[in-house]
Image (cartoon, rainbow over all chains, first blue to last red; front, side, top):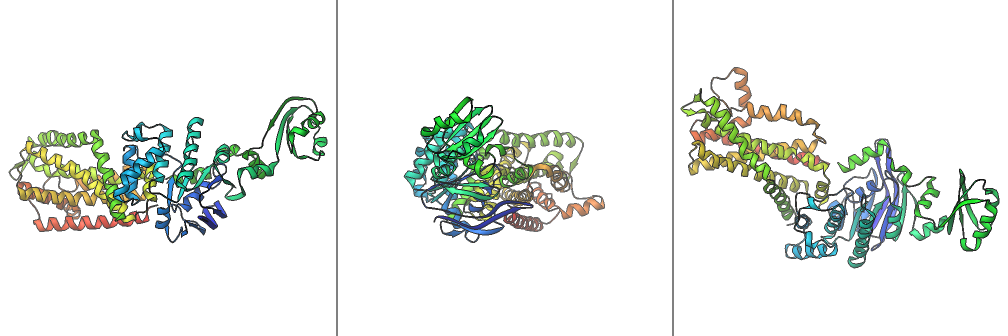
Length: 320
Length: 248
């Protein structure tokens, strides 16, 4: 286990941001922390990166205790922060050069390492430009490159694609996959984008209110919800009848909007639709991680994006 | 070794940014010229002290003003750094807080000493005559001043979380330090309260030492000026280091 937490907890005044979390991450995997804003993901990550001290409990990162051996932990990790953290007043190359010196990359390999990581994120031809002139996606790539410069065993990515457009996002995903494969680094990533956790992670921990609600591979998590879903608009749905069908595991009806979770949808859709009532709209889809979250907590991940003042306070604090 | 190259990295960053910001360099040259020409020239048309004309008299004071403002604002700027996420990346680096402080401090010193050197050159156009001895002394005093006040700025800035307190720092730290130092007036014949205050202000000794070196007009013996400057610098460096250790 390259990362292991032991009842790690962080309390801000009255708010328990991270609540006795026990978690282990295997070497080489891409591990996701998925949850709404303010769920405690960034707080957990900050503690593992030794930026914040836990109120209770501890963790081991690369075999080092985060409380007693912070310097060794810091050498083992690369960190990409939620907000852009490259120095705008310097060029991309200079940013990397400074990082290499601060992390003790030996002077004889500094330049070649910088070239290597620049190549990896396709920024070689812009390396001599000031970061000020970079696009959001380029800055992220630079920060990814920087996180890898000192060959860390673990890479922490805090919301790596926050605020990026879909195309850039999928590019970043490609880079992260490539890094994990080519460099063999363990990646711990926080996100509130379910597509991101689904597309990228080997295993996902769903976090809500500082606690882990579920932990498994994205496929297994979705499997637990049910094989497939039917969404239909029906005026007077015969909910009871549908519920009694043996292959239906869950039915939800709200204002004529019906969601049915069932197995082997292809074989049963005819019977379901016949029994449901007259539908004005029918949609078939596979469950997403949002459905998993919905089932676990009773609400969607995005519904919580309007943060409470306490959560904002914490974000300001951890950012500042 | 790791700490040392980290130190170099921190210093390199500050100097690089400073040299890149042309507007700051230009204003650092223009501001003191305005002081010398407008203030020194204007007031100098009616007054002079100890045989030196007023413009020459305040030159050491203006030199101090330039280095003081650059240093202390450089230090206070850490408040902004802390809010920007790139400083977080520095905070996570496997470097001790002492290294972090020293790197920043040396970066700030370099910036303000560079500005001081521009002004020393400008001094040639204002009838300031340098000898190797006087030049060495002036540089020594500027070093004390910039190390001490950069540290002071960093010490205060590390404890602040926003710019809200800046007005207060300006009113209660920077302005008194400058105006109560004898930078603009001689230390003789002062009213009782001002006499006491100027003697408590370490900047008094620094400006006095420089004035002594350049114009031969010291009020205190040179060893006293050097002694106070040295103690001031060491104390402020300690304060800054402590403040950085407690910063989060």
